[in-house]
Length: 188
Figure: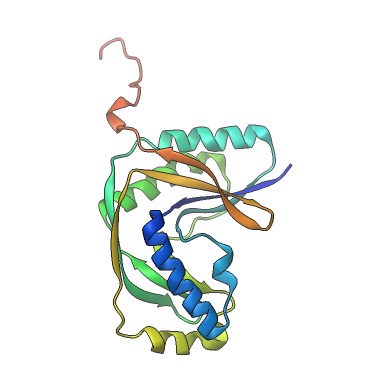
Protein backbone atom coordinates (compact mmCIF):
# COMPACT_ATOMS: atom_id res chain seq x y z
CA UNK A 1 0.00 0.00 0.00
CA UNK A 2 1.31 3.42 -0.89
CA UNK A 3 -0.80 6.56 -0.83
CA UNK A 4 0.08 10.12 -1.81
CA UNK A 5 -1.47 12.96 0.23
CA UNK A 6 -1.48 16.76 -0.10
CA UNK A 7 -2.33 19.18 2.75
CA UNK A 8 -3.90 22.36 1.39
CA UNK A 9 -6.39 25.21 1.63
CA UNK A 10 -9.20 25.00 -0.88
CA UNK A 11 -11.17 28.16 -1.67
CA UNK A 12 -14.98 28.03 -1.57
CA UNK A 13 -16.72 26.70 -4.67
CA UNK A 14 -17.69 30.12 -6.06
CA UNK A 15 -14.07 31.33 -5.95
CA UNK A 16 -12.73 27.98 -7.23
CA UNK A 17 -15.08 28.33 -10.22
CA UNK A 18 -13.67 31.82 -10.97
CA UNK A 19 -10.14 30.40 -10.75
CA UNK A 20 -11.04 27.45 -12.97
CA UNK A 21 -12.40 29.88 -15.56
CA UNK A 22 -8.98 31.58 -15.65
CA UNK A 23 -7.11 28.24 -15.72
CA UNK A 24 -9.30 27.00 -18.58
CA UNK A 25 -8.77 30.26 -20.50
CA UNK A 26 -4.98 29.94 -20.10
CA UNK A 27 -5.16 26.30 -21.12
CA UNK A 28 -7.16 27.04 -24.30
CA UNK A 29 -5.19 30.15 -25.27
CA UNK A 30 -1.70 28.83 -24.60
CA UNK A 31 -2.13 25.04 -24.87
CA UNK A 32 -0.92 24.31 -21.34
CA UNK A 33 -2.81 21.64 -19.44
CA UNK A 34 -0.76 20.45 -16.47
CA UNK A 35 -2.44 22.63 -13.82
CA UNK A 36 -5.90 21.37 -14.78
CA UNK A 37 -5.00 18.01 -13.22
CA UNK A 38 -5.15 19.60 -9.77
CA UNK A 39 -7.90 21.36 -7.85
CA UNK A 40 -7.54 25.09 -7.19
CA UNK A 41 -5.61 25.07 -3.90
CA UNK A 42 -2.94 26.66 -1.73
CA UNK A 43 -0.36 24.08 -0.64
CA UNK A 44 0.31 24.04 3.10
CA UNK A 45 2.54 20.95 3.04
CA UNK A 46 4.00 19.28 -0.06
CA UNK A 47 2.70 15.91 -1.24
CA UNK A 48 3.89 12.98 0.87
CA UNK A 49 3.85 9.23 0.25
CA UNK A 50 2.67 7.09 3.14
CA UNK A 51 3.19 3.36 2.86
CA UNK A 52 1.58 1.90 5.95
CA UNK A 53 -1.61 2.22 7.94
CA UNK A 54 0.49 3.14 10.97
CA UNK A 55 2.15 6.02 9.05
CA UNK A 56 -1.27 7.23 7.89
CA UNK A 57 -2.63 7.12 11.45
CA UNK A 58 0.30 9.20 12.74
CA UNK A 59 -0.10 11.64 9.82
CA UNK A 60 -3.81 12.23 10.43
CA UNK A 61 -3.37 12.39 14.21
CA UNK A 62 -0.74 15.14 13.74
CA UNK A 63 -3.09 17.05 11.44
CA UNK A 64 -5.84 16.77 14.05
CA UNK A 65 -3.54 18.62 16.47
CA UNK A 66 -2.71 21.16 13.73
CA UNK A 67 -6.43 21.96 13.43
CA UNK A 68 -6.28 23.73 16.81
CA UNK A 69 -6.36 27.06 15.05
CA UNK A 70 -8.32 30.29 14.87
CA UNK A 71 -10.36 31.21 11.76
CA UNK A 72 -9.01 33.95 9.51
CA UNK A 73 -9.80 35.73 6.25
CA UNK A 74 -7.65 34.94 3.22
CA UNK A 75 -7.19 37.37 0.34
CA UNK A 76 -6.22 36.27 -3.17
CA UNK A 77 -4.96 39.27 -5.10
CA UNK A 78 -3.65 39.76 -8.64
CA UNK A 79 -1.20 37.66 -10.63
CA UNK A 80 2.45 36.83 -10.19
CA UNK A 81 5.00 34.19 -11.16
CA UNK A 82 8.08 32.23 -10.31
CA UNK A 83 10.24 33.05 -13.34
CA UNK A 84 9.89 30.72 -16.28
CA UNK A 85 8.04 27.87 -14.56
CA UNK A 86 4.90 28.91 -12.61
CA UNK A 87 2.16 31.50 -13.11
CA UNK A 88 -0.19 32.04 -10.17
CA UNK A 89 -2.68 34.13 -8.23
CA UNK A 90 -0.90 35.78 -5.33
CA UNK A 91 -1.98 34.76 -1.84
CA UNK A 92 -1.64 37.68 0.55
CA UNK A 93 0.44 36.69 3.54
CA UNK A 94 -1.28 37.25 6.88
CA UNK A 95 -0.85 35.92 10.40
CA UNK A 96 -3.61 33.36 9.85
CA UNK A 97 -2.07 31.53 6.89
CA UNK A 98 1.48 31.86 8.21
CA UNK A 99 0.47 30.41 11.61
CA UNK A 100 -1.55 27.61 10.00
CA UNK A 101 1.36 26.54 7.79
CA UNK A 102 3.74 26.69 10.78
CA UNK A 103 1.36 24.61 12.89
CA UNK A 104 0.92 21.96 10.17
CA UNK A 105 4.70 21.80 9.58
CA UNK A 106 5.46 21.66 13.32
CA UNK A 107 3.07 18.75 13.88
CA UNK A 108 4.28 16.80 10.82
CA UNK A 109 8.00 17.48 11.32
CA UNK A 110 8.60 14.64 13.86
CA UNK A 111 7.27 12.17 11.26
CA UNK A 112 10.22 13.00 8.95
CA UNK A 113 8.07 12.81 5.82
CA UNK A 114 10.25 15.09 3.70
CA UNK A 115 13.98 15.80 3.62
CA UNK A 116 13.86 19.59 3.78
CA UNK A 117 10.79 21.76 3.51
CA UNK A 118 11.08 24.76 1.23
CA UNK A 119 10.34 28.24 2.52
CA UNK A 120 6.57 28.82 2.55
CA UNK A 121 5.54 31.07 -0.33
CA UNK A 122 1.73 30.83 -0.53
CA UNK A 123 0.30 30.99 -4.04
CA UNK A 124 -2.51 29.50 -6.09
CA UNK A 125 -1.10 27.98 -9.29
CA UNK A 126 -2.75 28.75 -12.62
CA UNK A 127 -0.14 27.20 -14.92
CA UNK A 128 3.15 25.31 -14.42
CA UNK A 129 5.39 22.51 -15.75
CA UNK A 130 4.31 22.76 -19.42
CA UNK A 131 4.35 26.58 -19.34
CA UNK A 132 7.99 27.30 -20.25
CA UNK A 133 7.56 27.79 -24.05
CA UNK A 134 4.70 30.30 -23.51
CA UNK A 135 5.67 31.77 -20.14
CA UNK A 136 6.44 35.28 -21.44
CA UNK A 137 3.23 35.36 -23.52
CA UNK A 138 1.11 34.51 -20.47
CA UNK A 139 2.87 37.18 -18.39
CA UNK A 140 2.25 39.74 -21.15
CA UNK A 141 -1.42 38.71 -21.46
CA UNK A 142 -2.07 39.20 -17.73
CA UNK A 143 0.12 42.25 -17.14
CA UNK A 144 -2.03 44.90 -15.53
CA UNK A 145 -5.06 42.62 -15.08
CA UNK A 146 -6.59 42.70 -11.62
CA UNK A 147 -8.07 39.90 -9.53
CA UNK A 148 -9.24 39.98 -5.94
CA UNK A 149 -11.26 37.53 -3.89
CA UNK A 150 -11.37 36.88 -0.18
CA UNK A 151 -12.84 34.11 1.88
CA UNK A 152 -13.07 32.93 5.48
CA UNK A 153 -10.79 30.04 6.38
CA UNK A 154 -12.20 27.73 9.04
CA UNK A 155 -10.58 24.46 7.94
CA UNK A 156 -7.90 22.88 5.78
CA UNK A 157 -8.06 19.83 3.54
CA UNK A 158 -6.17 16.68 2.70
CA UNK A 159 -6.34 15.47 -0.88
CA UNK A 160 -5.42 11.92 -1.92
CA UNK A 161 -3.99 11.02 -5.31
CA UNK A 162 -6.34 8.40 -6.81
CA UNK A 163 -7.01 7.39 -10.40
CA UNK A 164 -4.34 9.85 -11.63
CA UNK A 165 -6.14 12.82 -10.01
CA UNK A 166 -6.15 14.63 -6.68
CA UNK A 167 -9.42 13.86 -4.90
CA UNK A 168 -10.79 15.45 -1.70
CA UNK A 169 -10.13 13.00 1.12
CA UNK A 170 -10.54 14.66 4.53
CA UNK A 171 -11.29 18.09 5.92
CA UNK A 172 -10.03 19.36 9.26
CA UNK A 173 -12.30 22.03 10.74
CA UNK A 174 -10.54 24.41 13.09
CA UNK A 175 -10.97 23.87 16.81
CA UNK A 176 -10.31 26.60 19.35
CA UNK A 177 -6.67 26.33 20.51
CA UNK A 178 -7.83 27.01 24.07
CA UNK A 179 -9.50 23.58 24.08
CA UNK A 180 -6.11 21.82 23.75
CA UNK A 181 -5.62 19.62 26.81
CA UNK A 182 -3.05 21.10 29.19
CA UNK A 183 -0.30 18.85 30.53
CA UNK A 184 -1.08 17.60 33.99
CA UNK A 185 0.86 19.28 36.77
CA UNK A 186 0.88 18.91 40.52
CA UNK A 187 1.33 22.67 40.88
CA UNK A 188 -0.86 24.01 38.05
